[in-house]
Amino acid sequence: MKNINILAIETSCDETSAAVVSDGWRVLSNIIFSQIDIHRVYGGVVPEIASRSHIEKVDDVVAEALAAANVTLDDIAAVAVTFGPGLVGALLVGLNFGKALAYARGLPLVGVHHIAGHIASCYLENDGIALPFVALVVSGGHTQLVYVRDYTDFEILGQSLDDAAGEAFDKVARSLGLPYPGGIEIDRLARQGDPFAIDFPRAWLGADSYDFSFSGLKSAVLNHLNTAKMSGRDISHADIAASFQAAVVDVLTKKAISACSHVGATRLAVVGGVACNTALRASLTDLCGNNGITLHIPPPVFCTDNAAMIAAAAYHKYQIGDFSDQHLNAVPNLPLSV
Ligand code: KG4
Ligand code: ZN
Image (cartoon, rainbow, N blue to C red; front, top):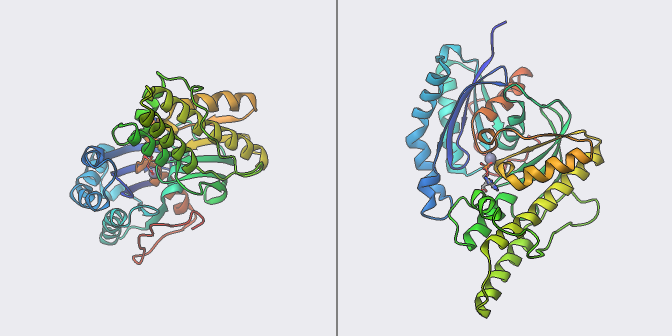
């Protein structure tokens, strides 16, 4: 049987990425141009600059993805694009490129939800997760617990009511004078600090709630810093980083485990950029082990934004004939159920 090769394009935020994935799991190429160096001077992503950079890069990145996969457009079965959620100007670049390519080549177009893409990062390469499972989605823009019943059947069990986990990491890092993106910087600094030094608040939001809130924690860190500054007290930034990270990890892990027992899932996946966090990985490895839950965390390159995960999600829509047409538009706040 002929392999189904999907060419995917992802431009929802600050990575221009294109990938070719075969049969929904075998990654033939996954080219990622990160704009981090461009945005770092501003301390965060500047949407207008992100869109312009995507325009400059998208055709090269797509050509590189085809070349690295050693295929031509004749070997491609469908073109997949992220159409939301994300920055509208950024999304439109990849979306219009994908639409034009699909039209010109007479190929089916598959619109993919960015979070469905993050969830599908679990199917890539040899060690794909079996269904059903609970996905803890922790990225710069989203924090969600999702029950994945089937490849295209999602139930949101809970989500952040304010800041996303990654956003909280980035904002706290900024207040500590660390460069953007701050998640990895906090992760590094925390290794030299004491996670028990400061008892930062944890928002549990009720016994059976799978929702999250990180804005109170973020304010508590800022207050701690300001109070110390005003009183001229010497404080350890490493202790603050470690204690903040411990509070985030505590809430994420406990809610993820209790969501698994709520739906009777024996598999937990962690996806999105914050899944790279070493403290989160270590804590979940322990807790899952103690609770008989199999933990699945994709390698870091598939956790942060990439087009291979978009191709993996598109494959399952392709299999059920769920195609998009040329009217597909970018939807900045697209809900996951679509
Ligand atoms: O999934 P992603 O690449 O982009 C979005 O879809 O948002 O996630 C980016 C987020 C950023 O907030 C970044 O600081 C965070 O993931 N991140 C981390 C780590 N590596 C990346 N947060 C904590 N610890 C890390 N090691
Ligand atoms: Zn993402």
